[in-house]
Image (cartoon, rainbow over all chains, first blue to last red; front, side):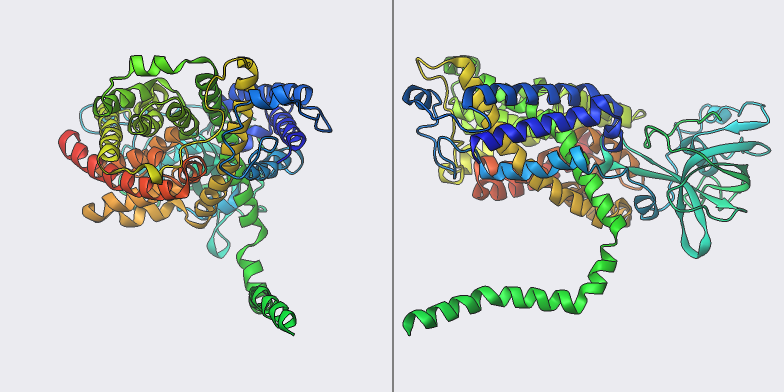
Length: 260
Length: 326
């Protein structure tokens, strides 16, 4: 890889990182929010590196190298793996793929395709049962409609043997994942580091026709008990009275209570 | 006549794969297109991009540290700090892994620059293995993922450190210099050259080189991630003896980042704690991204041998530590 191409790659990658982390919120489609400072710092560092390289090596045309310059690199005895003094590693060409991808062709956040490939699984019960009795799940507030996260709802629907969900109207927000035979789920993907470790939270919706896949919706309804609560046989489900389309949230992987 | 025959045979050899692939594409085209429906491709692109973006800051951190070691830290520092005997240097270097925060992407360039500066390969390799597994960020993530079992954090620390030290000693005993293509490139400070310029060149070279291999590893990891849903993990939860090596194998293809490994392991509720420990110990030490980075930096002959040996040692160590602590 010629040095001017390396400069171009560093600049592309740096600008791409700043584009997705500083100028837009696209980075939230791929990594957790906490990585933003690291992404901005990397973008700045790559642009600085590219700018310094452009000044030292010449850009867009390689500056002819003087003798002393070439010696100082310490590259002279290190031509072993497929690149000479002036050239960089050939494998670096591959970095153009993600660099141009995040600049021009940012792929969408993961959605119903990923959610449909995993079974509905509730998070574990919050702590060891037994000693403290019924304090595992605090009682729900006594408002008319209780907004809940999918995480909280699924945990209660599967593990809460005290039935704190009974008699409450709850509201859940997520995207639509079609199931088999016309069934559908309101679902979320939760990431802990990057999109590669996404975990599925989904609640089966009864009593309403399926909106298009990947549409974001708020569903209101009551708990639909399925299976024996407290065992792996239970699964979260909802008897729905209202389904409303909502705009997609900024951070698609953050399972929070959405206030209308 | 002779040349004509040779050209014909060359054309045939070159043409055969084209014809074969073309035939396959014509025959199975619709099926292949259906199998790769655009939603799967979109998911692949998202996961691929996510792994690269997640890796770049850590890779950059690793190459900055490695370039700083090459350009600014004189070689005598390492001979002074590390015990002279490699057998003693291995545990010290393994424990030193605790100071480099970040993912496995960061540790490969640092280990390579340590070798360039004359640190015994065994010690540098112990550091390479332990750094992503025992640094404070990863241990805190493990604690957050397993809030009810603080022993899991201890077990992960002990098993990871044990694996890296055993691998270092194993390298002293059984390793051969010719497997390891010692990293080339800027070999340290040359008198008369500007240190800042050396730092820049080494940073640029190492980052671009390792970054290319990060892309290879991310592509492989994304392919497995999309092709193998995480629910496969639960298939093996019934047999405790099979669960340990199976989670070890799945850690290689599914683990992406040492912080996230803890959360993935925590979600595998059907498995014994020991099997989950194996997932967290193998994940940061042997995975597709790391194998790609290692073969780029140290050569393929090394990466294959080292990764398979590490896998065996890591599974055995987690089995022992899990039996002892969990």
